[in-house]
Image (cartoon, rainbow, N blue to C red):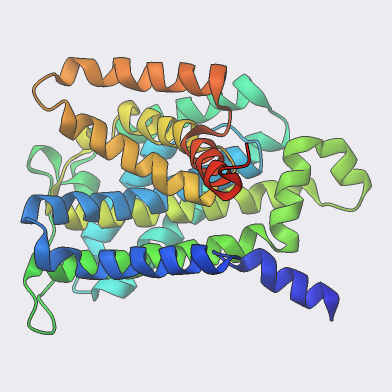
Length: 326
């Protein structure tokens, strides 16, 4: 019984009354956002929601399992173009979304096989090569990508009397909430602990009964599923996709979000998504500075705050919890 209670406690977003109140206020603010914020802020919030899903998937692979991958742009493209074709064939949004994630997960299992023998920079280079190969496939095969004209994606139909933009925002907010709950459950389960054991010491994990083949491939599959869903949602937001969108920069953007937001942190994944969305918007007139800010962000995190933005948030909470006794 104690183990059950401990597990339930691990799954709680907020374990203190004040934290629960703040969480409730945050949820209420997000629900009410479209009613008082301008449309461009609602659109940015929609982007943060969909990017949070992809960054969570990347964090499961890098942060929790210790498998460095730069193939995320490839899975974004697979998810996006699969979703586009399924929508063109007439599948409803939920089925097309699930199909996009499932195909990305299947390909992720195949890409995960090198992780059984490669580690660190060698695995990163192998996945980078896969990403470049997928990009070239979509560029050169018009039947897959629609060629130079790309693919047009039908917009979500307005529901419950809401505008199209507000409908899309609420759908994405519901999805990121669902993925966050699933991710919390996953990392608190035996599977999540197996991921962490592989990250910390894979040989010791194997000696203690963790099947390295099964869990490494599972980590790639789950991460790729998240990224495929991210790609599908991104395609839905854009309304039109072509291969040029899914270049190496997208993989680097997700990597920056994981590191700056906080490695092995679900909350950090959301903060990292907010970071990579907010920086380009704030520097819209100085786009050449965006890579510099990303690079500085990684350097500052590595030098001063290994837990990233989430670590800063933890320290802030600790400060106010102990104030004025410091």
